[in-house]
Length: 615
Image (cartoon, rainbow, N blue to C red; front, top):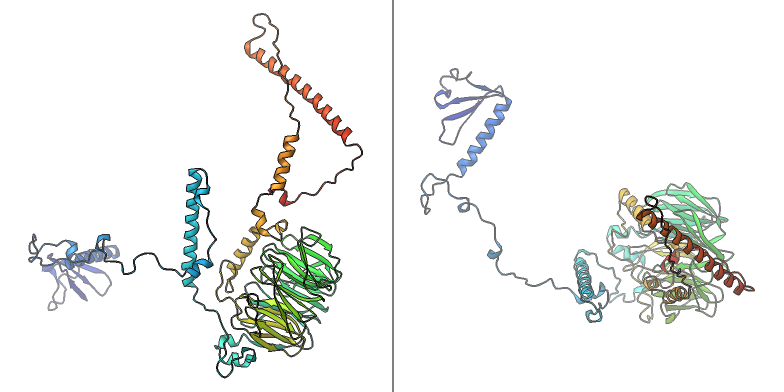
């Protein structure tokens, strides 16, 4: 039996027996240990609800008793009276109670960080005419400045640093550092990202990484195709297509990839099941996928360029470039233009909206073997069989750097941080800052087992994938990948639900193929020439103004014609006369135009496109 006295001045007490019920009695009836409690044992037996209420009352009384204090020392109070709450609890700080701010003013930001997110000089308020527009411009400029400041403050959340490879006193020349030495000096997780797949019976190999850099697909010339998570080495599918494989390419997610086989192009899922057979893409040598347009671009052996919309399963356009096989090709990530190298040393740029190249330049005196464009779309790297490597400014079509390398390069690739990978025979060299400054020696050098056929940098990882005749090799390249990623754009750690939502969002924000152009900034400009033509055409049209008609209906007997009826008759007759005169004048104008068109050829009607509504 448990017995507890009420701490207040009341004479109640509560007793809990062995039966689980509570017995309620006064102080005079409290059972004593000597009498055994037989006198008051059966008085006021309480049930479950009464027990709960009694406990609540007991808790309230205990809290109230804890607040009772002897406050005789306080001014204006008497002994035994509850003092105000502020005498026993600490009050919250008010605005006036705060002390001086140890760090006054806004958070200081590095000017270099603000310049990184700057949108350029703003609009001058004095150039705006009306006061309303001036206030609107000022409000917009404040919003842009606030967004730049927030972006600069968000740099604190990007805690990952860029990798770097530096030599020491013993080994100062970084190209002599081997992969074994790098793997011995990095952590265990990073060391596992360097590996070799020895597959000499199926080579040479082509490879491709997903946009988030998590999955890898490889394809051997003798039909071997495999897709897997290259960081954890989990195999998703492995098949043999029983045909020669010329190229492999991931599509918008890691659930679908395209394989350019001997005759046609096929699309498989991540289980190795064939989904589609694109017979219009035949004898393909090179594949490129435009993620924001959902277009699969292909260059064939016969010189045809093709664009297929994979979201609709529709062939957008296909035509013959008439420049030979299209085996050397890449895309410009900034404007989705395809860049192709040809045997006469020419580099051409193609859009699905034009049958002629949007740009053409003579890059080398001999055949072009490799082309690559960096992620910003500013620099273009080309390599020829004459052992020359050139860096071009795509905006001005101007050669910035001209290097002489040890052998003719067969593959070029830019990394996320601007490093340039150059494959020559069985050696791959990586150059750092080669676009802005003239470098004398490579940043890294690696020698493979056999001839290299494909190279790709892993997005957001310091690694490079090398496909060669003996299999596939992944090497560590410190400083090649961007250490921080935008999870709303690409997320290497996304769940299945996030992947589905990202796929739906990408489909909703899909950019039509008609908007692909060499200069994407022209889409926001006004087509002045077309606008002036429309105004001139409008002014040249003949405006037919109907003549004024005076008509009054005849007066009728009383009750036969009222005011409303006379108005209705007048309006009907005037409308008929106007329509008759207009038809006569339109017929005269049509006869005159027909006479003037005699002997002129008919103009062909052009198909309407999405850009027509922007004119």
